[in-house]
Image 1 (cartoon, rainbow, N blue to C red):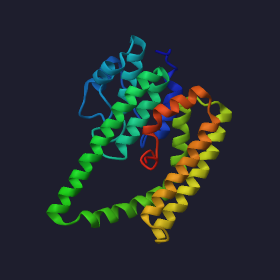
Image 2 (cartoon, rainbow, N blue to C red):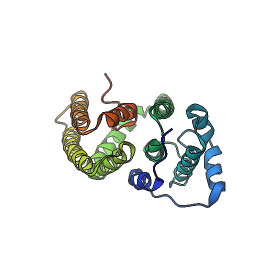
Image 3 (cartoon, rainbow, N blue to C red):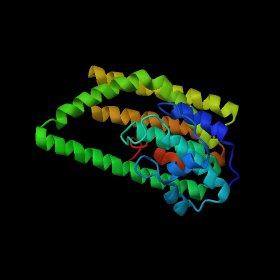
Image 4 (cartoon, rainbow, N blue to C red):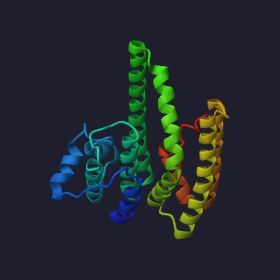
Length: 250
């Protein structure tokens, strides 16, 4: 396992990804509580991670500290989106610099499995509500409209968080980070145009999906042209966690 990079750098990027800040706690007690509590954490528990990744002593400390930070995030105990996604990404940013490629791939698999379980549970709840009250389609339309507004309003801040996260997990140089921010600006403009077209009714949802996918593909090409060979390998491992991953699926 790689010698772990100090938590400060990853922590700064993690703070940008979190919906709210994290408070501090004392000593081993907080770390152990976070590491052993399954229900209040949206990321895997310490025991699950240790069993899958075979952590050494130094990296056990890194993982426990990261779990503590996730536990203390505002709203801990709520597993619904977007909080769950933010906590997972925050956790990955904190621990990724300490993990080798094989360990990182196993962690990504664990998190994506949990995301799929949450997605299936949400769909089951929505379908049950539809069968009981006939509100499924109306609710989806209302929620989609609200989501479009949030996506448009929050696009600049979202791009900044995305850049900070990539910086933390890939170890970007200053020049690389500037190029990544430029590429993210182009992606953000394309996404905002599509969301505004959806809101105004100028584009169908199917066409919008294809346009968003094309925008993510273009960003991915720009991003890979910026990275070193080692960073590209790490990016491929992290790909399932990145924003737009579902749009990029065939």
